[in-house]
Length: 112
Length: 116
Image (tube, rainbow over all chains, first blue to last red; front, top):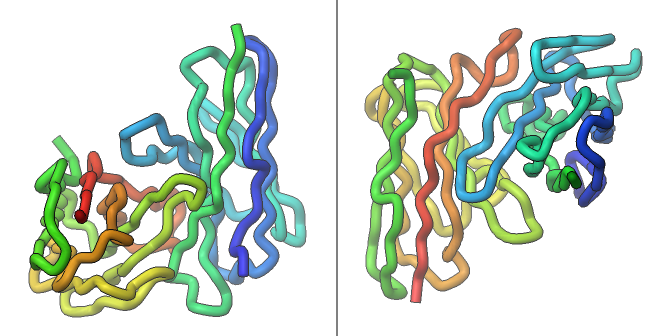
């Protein structure tokens, strides 16, 4: 049973806006949605976190609809250094909100 | 510097030889967790700990043990490693799980384990 679902890969040209969507149908009431970025042979790094509606920080925006069953990470004007795997992280309502599951990850390739 | 450290970073061992991968954090975090990462499967949680002496199974706990005797340390123990435990392992810590706004997980640099 998949906890979250993301596209396996995406390509984008430099300077474009990239939107990556994650589905999480079993999200628990108290769970936050968190996105991480991972470069090869490194541990994941926190990008952004939100509960509902929209959150923005200096590197990304996170859009969450009212039903919270999905979320969209938006990266404005990507550069080559944004090439990485992006993970969506939520708790699971079946096993408890403290048991955190990563998605399968989306491999973003930024093309010059 | 706030960080999560893991040791060893690389380990090659043989089937059945017990091993321990250490994890330590200096941020006074309550929550710690172990993940394994395999090609095509993403990151999967092995065990997690909400606090000292409190541990619970994640998604793939079979073949692993953990202990949390002190807040800062969370070792991963493989009593009898097998080749299917060859993987890249990450330890992570956070303030208190997913209940707190801005509660990000800090990941260690990873331990690449090969079991022959």
